[in-house]
Image (tube, rainbow, N blue to C red; front, side):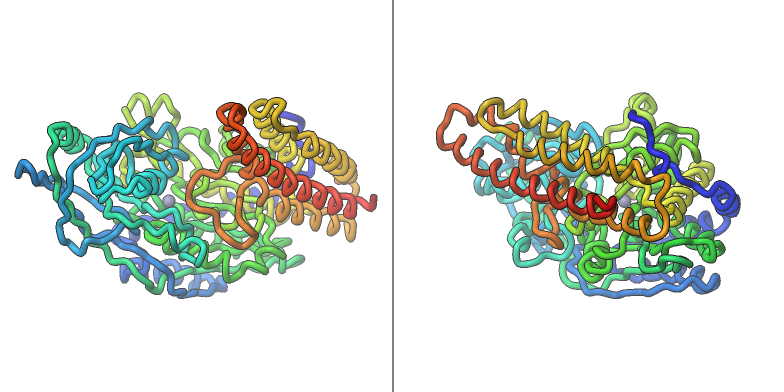
Length: 592
Ligand SMILES: [Zn+2]
């Protein structure tokens, strides 16, 4: 890794020590235990009891908070049945996925067609995004394939005209999930993507029997029951005002709702955020900026409906004042001994690396944020870090025969009835709470926002090189490379002043840092207009230019090549304009 700039490594050792020493397991562990008795479906009474527990603590400490109760589009899966209909035979245990079509418990019958999954999910990202190549006539039939009932899978099965989809999970358990690609509550542009077929998931042994049935030309009967519609969900936001720049804030956030009692996903995260609220409130006189802490409902049953609602309804405040968003999902789980799948946008990598090594002794391996996990702020353009945090090493997972899942520190009880108290680990929770608190404190109090945008430009440069390699002489990204050179030059001049700026110059420095996020995050993470939300499907780096990778296949066909070149031209224009705006912002800050 390149040299880490000193403004990125800023800390207040005495205050940080005091803050971390005051972190205790007492309240957090009691919250985790309490939550182990509450099935926190979005908008349910038991979720409300969980909110009341959090509010009770906030009230007793005097921490200001607001409980919003927006009406959002929520889907609770209730029941699914799958049985062999021809020949008449066995019933299989099944679950449906949130947002799938409800048959109202009525069976539909269809010929079962087995489409082997091209590949299984290799990592956490692919748990959510991997699709299936249908390549057969499945119209009016029930498709059977391997994987979780994820949005990528269901989208492909739907597009092929299937009557329904049955998904074979990788192990003994059947994992709950949500199958829509619509991010948050639908709008006019996204409503058409609402899943239009019933969906069921079965476990692996039952799936093998169904494959055999499909190969014999059998039929299955399938029913689903869901409660889908508009319902009030809680969105709880605590606010601890900073002493100096109270308009500026860091947003720490995570989901409150869960599948079953969801201890590893995400009772431990809810407890972590509550403890952070407690210790930051004690030190509120010493905070430079404000801290907002959001507990969202609607994550599991509304595809991030709560965080999306917050992003929509506080969009302009977020755009003007949010320094960074820090997501807290599944900390403190058993056997987690690495930070090997740690989410961080490039500009935050040196910061995250420093703070995690200093607080845990573990060197993290960071990854580009996947299109999941309450990252509902990419369209606004907010630097984000963390999502899933501590996780088991690959060796440990191999040793246990664990397949990839999307949370719970890689414990495969994730999204099942078995995500119980034994998934939480006291020592790991304490470690992770300290890590979160130190990370938040450093951003809240750093005189200069501790993000290094030359990491982002380097990242963009590497992406462009990959795309240039693919397009060869059929498309030239020189214009983008030149704009990148100019931005890097300007950043170099600004960052050279970092050790001496204060007062108004520091404000200008921070304003530039904030605007860089608003300009560069969207071009690297979103295809949409600002304030709209991309689908819950993989967004590749520089998404407008990512189709460059298909040039080798398109280059010998005039039609495909021409269309692709037009797209890349427009995409490059968007990028160059963003880089040029970014450079102007940086030059204004350094008085150039
Ligand atoms: Zn989660």
